[in-house]
Length: 200
Image 1 (cartoon, rainbow, N blue to C red):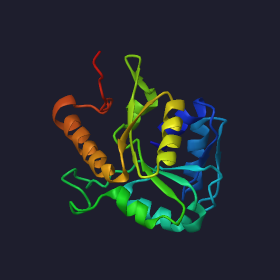
Image 2: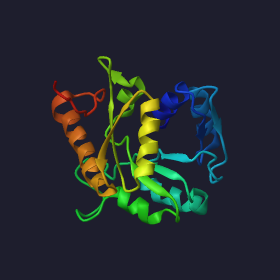
Image 3: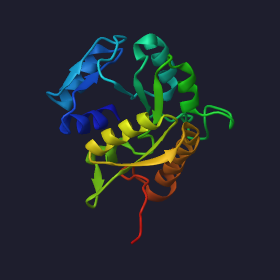
């Protein structure tokens, strides 16, 4: 996902900053993305305002806590899915969801927006199907934060779809489980995404 989003962002003219606990992995990803990508030391305050949390869910809370106040006033895009490794269910009870746990962990002033979690990396890297842009569902509590993520999404050649407040991230995380069910039982490959068709 980091490669797919970073590649689209660089193609759209954005500067992409790559950080990883493993500097060699960060450098390799930056080189794959191209000349508009650079690396910074893991834990250094991100220079950009939009921070994509492109890590597995089991690592994301530790990453957020590690950066601490370096994420204050940043816009954090949660692309994670707190799904068990055997796809049998979620890592939380029904009363909670991944984005909620991230929002509780971020410093004051940071905004969390859920996005990109229902679009697999293979489809995302292509960006469109049959000439139609892929849909990116967005949930968040701050209208200005969602507007910025929507504008960023459009700049990548994708179609943002606002689904409401951050509580709707619970539904988006379940939509990923739907995607996994389709991949496992019907479609049998990963190069597809869930979208909206508007008749007329």
